[in-house]
Image (tube, rainbow, N blue to C red; front, top):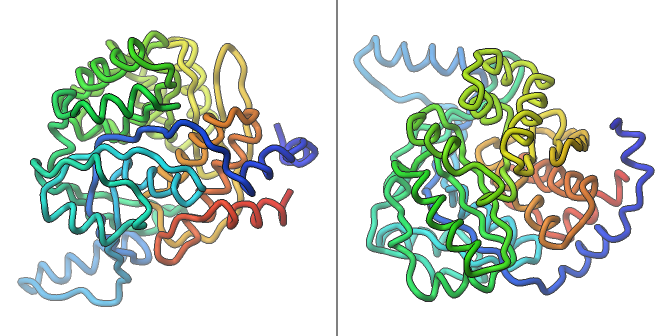
Length: 360
């Protein structure tokens, strides 16, 4: 589908939802909060060369970067983005008392933090944002903290009650969890037995926890438990390799057509709806049907959290039953406005409405 085909479609319902976000059962988002520290520089090569020079002189201080301290973690970012879009999510995360204080200072006071657990350990990430081979990349160095051991047993009765009443349960950041497959299986089995909620998954980059993610893909990624999985091109390539044991999918990060083929294969093999987001386009794959929508041009100031913003738009459109094209268009717009923000701010529903009205 090319852009000319997209702009001829009727977006009236999308605009109505952005102007007046509907009352829907709140989505539940879990289980991670990270303190994010952005280090924003120019090129990767120049950044590494500066570090080498410091090391060779025995240490020192690299100056000239721009840095931001922000709320982070897939769950907190997605919940924050949903709130900005007019949807009040239920956020279930685990940290420590210091983490809760930091979280309160970094998110809107309107975000419900009553389900935050403080008997864990603070998770944190340094995201080095540079350009490499002509494209912006974010290189994350993380301490997983409580994202590594969150389990079904951490859920209180009030959490389970929220899940029972939700429209969608999003389980994110599974790449940090040592027992990702067990966590996903237990939570989504509970959802299937006790709720009419959709189940949504975003595993994150599998490469640092490949054994756990392999077990997750082979045992849990199926339509019996998962309705939707959101992937970028790297994640699509990894999952396709796990499913087929074919190294062809290594090229998914450099060839977006291969990434698209990988996403299509995943959907066919698992019967799960696959939502793929890349720098050039987003696409959805389900029941041998593919819809692709080009992304919006945006000057990128941050990359870390872009996928979470995209997911927020995807979730909003899913629970309000927008069409596939409207859903991908909304998600693309939310992500474009986020990455173009100097301070990693999530766009409001009104921001997205104005942005789309000018373009389509």
